[in-house]
Length: 322
Ligand SMILES: Nc1nc2c(c(=O)[nH]1)N[C@H]1C(S)=C(S)[C@@H](COP(=O)(O)O)O[C@H]1N2
Ligand SMILES: [Mo]
Image 1 (cartoon, protein in one colour):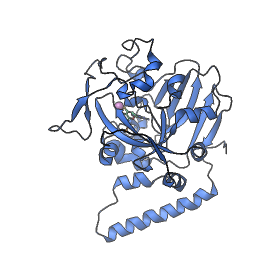
Image 2: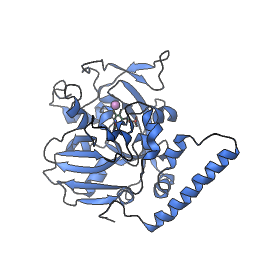
Image 3: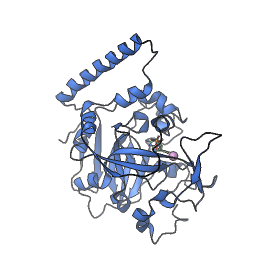
Image 4: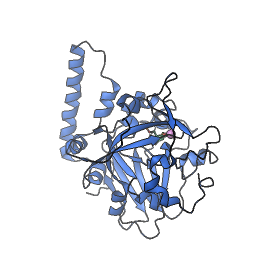
């Protein structure tokens, strides 16, 4: 179903939404009876989405990419976050995550495509069988995780809208709504957050759209209801809470590049041989990491996905195109 307005809602969802509200109240009542002070914000974040997605996730998925490295504990992945819309501290996203309403949610696909449109998220997700992919995730700040994402390939999404021959780049945009994202009241950051990929990067089978992680609906602090995951690039490319996807002819503007082009390039491929101007990229702290147990490991070229992605950059000087 293609809809015109973002506040359209299916009657079936209104019913499930009220069931969910009742379940929350029930949960609150029973925790109070047990003498527990409050429902942890994680419970709220993990259940704040609608039942269609919970149902989708409860259907069998296939794990298509895995690793023998240990998966990062849920607590680290959901409480040590970068999501500047909620605040600039690592614990702000988990603290304010319940302010984001992820239903209804729609995404606009526009630009160089034969079939542009605005779709309710449910209709965008429906045709895809969900896959689990366990990816390494490396932030430009030199910490890293291993996360089991649930979603589908970006290529499958894009192909449905039929990119034209002029579609050379893809631009992504995060929701702008200062009522839900408190830090967007500040003009010190060029909101909305924007990211981009070259079309061949976007079509690479590793580029992923996640709607879940750890077998659950994506918590708000991790970019609910839908985010990009580009495992061979620094984390800032993996834009959260996407509302717009635009196929374009020219290299699009991206937030971190606009803020500080000398430190954050458009490509942002994980590369231990090219240091950030203010720190080395040769190693990373694998979460959980503490002062006394830093858990420092070497950083791999393209974050260990060289075999799958090196062809994209074969004639490029990766020092120049960092
Ligand atoms: N909209 C938006 N997307 C974003 C960010 C952000 O601040 N806003 N931070 C990026 C950065 S720097 C990183 S490292 C990852 C963090 O993802 P995680 O919190 O799920 O680990 O999200 C990326 N996507
Ligand atoms: Mo990051």
